Image 1 (cartoon, one colour):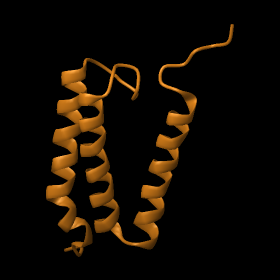
Image 2 (tube, rainbow, N blue to C red):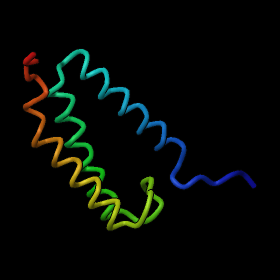
Image 3 (cartoon, rainbow, N blue to C red):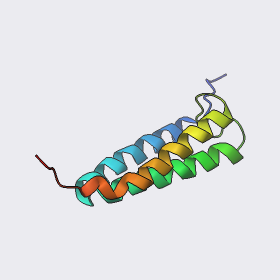
Image 4 (cartoon, helix red, strand yellow):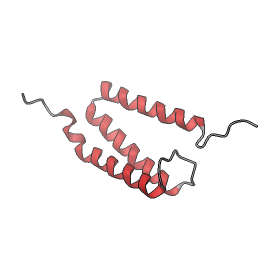
Amino acid sequence: MGEKRVPASALLWLTTLWVVMIAVFALTAGPVFAIRSLGISMVGYAIARLVLPTGTVPDVRGRALDTATLMLCGIALLALADWGNATNVA
């Protein structure tokens, strides 16, 4: 019998690839686009965590706490994304 990972290793690699893509967006398309992409993906991930069966997406704590944390952080990123291009005032 082989090792059974919950969630699948492919999903963890896909999540890692998405984080790398956000970093590439920040360097190529700009910080506002990268922050909005990360915020939207966090809200989407929160919805997936809420509706998909346990073990389908990586979980940290309970379903409610994971969903609330991801949703609040994603909404905060979306609300603050416009400040990503703010100039430095020294």
